Image 1 (cartoon, rainbow, N blue to C red):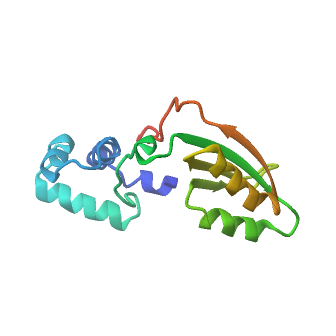
Image 2: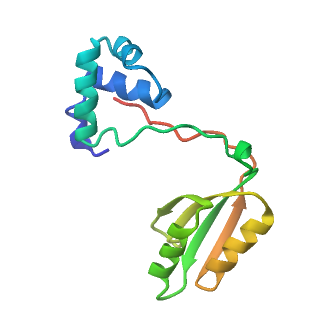
Image 3: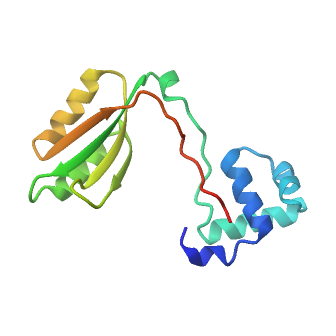
Amino acid sequence: MSTHFLQFLDGSDRKIVEALAGDARLSLKELAARAGLSSPACSERLRRLEERGVLTGYSADVELEALGYPLQAIVRVRPLPGMLHIVERIIQETPEITEADKVTGDDCFICRMALRSMTDLDRILDRIAERAQTNTAMIKSTTVKRRLPPVV
C-alpha cells in the first residue's frame, strides 16, 4: 500500500483492516462491533476499501502439510543471460511455487515452494536448471507467518 492510502485511513478503517487481517471470516456484525460502527456503515467502508484497492481479497489460511505437502523450500533463482522471461514463465506455470518475488541483487527471483517430496524438488529444479542457477534452502519451521505490518 503506498503512502497516499494512509491519509484516507481513519481509525475505523484501520480497525476494519486489522480485524480482517486477523480473521477474514468475521461476520459483518462482528466486524462492525470491532470497528465501533453500525453494520450498514461498516459495509459501506468495506466497499470503499475494496474500490480503493486497500482490501484486495479475502483468503483462508491452509495448512500445507494437511494437503500432503510436508516440505517447503525457498529457492533463489538467477537466470542465465537472455533467459529471464523464460524462467519467469516457468516459475508462473509451476503450481508448487506458491509465491515468487522478482528482486534486486544477484538473484532475480525468490520463490517459496510447497513440496510432497525431495523428488518433487528435483523435478522442479531440473526444469529451471537449464536456464538458471538456483540456490535452495529447505524450511525447517516458520518463525513468523505472513502478517500485516502495523497499520498506523
